[in-house]
Image (cartoon, rainbow, N blue to C red; front, side, top):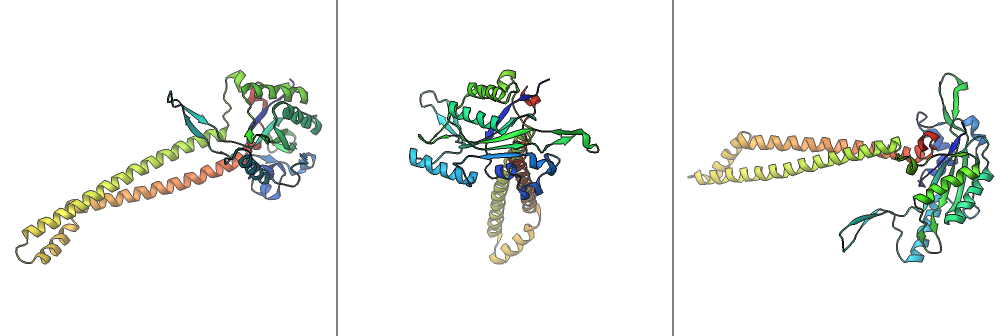
Length: 330
């Protein structure tokens, strides 16, 4: 069966893309080999191309340059966050996606794929949609062993990374590609790379939900649940403290009324004796328990946020850069 190609495009993580693609030493030292295995003995077979207009600049430099360009062309700061737009007539709310000026595509290749073919693919994409290729990296050193004890069971994960500038520098606006455009891009890749075309999710009806995407989604739901519980506990604390304040006031009032002679003595001895017993003691104990629960929620929230950050970093620096298998595109 002929090997299929596919291309999976996502916003480029400028903080980790070049570390991964250029195989920087600090990146190799910290990767999780259970998730992403790189054979250093095969790294020499990798290839790289950088657009002359990018030169020695980093992707972060390019991002900042784009931000300045957008401000100059449109008079507005580049919107990178999603926002809601409400139709004044119908009240319908639509989500306007934030700008992602740099995007990265992972292309499945085979043993015979050349850099010239990938550059030709980039040229055609630029002519067709105006997206500008900045970097192309061929990775032939990633994969896995079917049997870690048997070196002959090595299964390479052959793929290439293409980083694009997704902006129109004449207008300061992003290039708009719809589902039909993405389908056409898949077909172009198969034609130029001389590989069989993988089926897209629009053809199969399957959503492209990676494992890390699913985990992060679940973590966000759990974080929301913890924070909602915390808010509920904080409300309980507020109510309990109000009740405690009222009880203390009532105790003081009752003691003042019953003090026939020495008011100060009555308040001191009466409140002091009630302070550690009855409803007052119960309320104080309840408030203390609530504070302890809130502290536990805070700790759980912090731990979950750390896990999410680590997962998202891996998502950006590892799984984002692990090209989808042909099975994923079927």
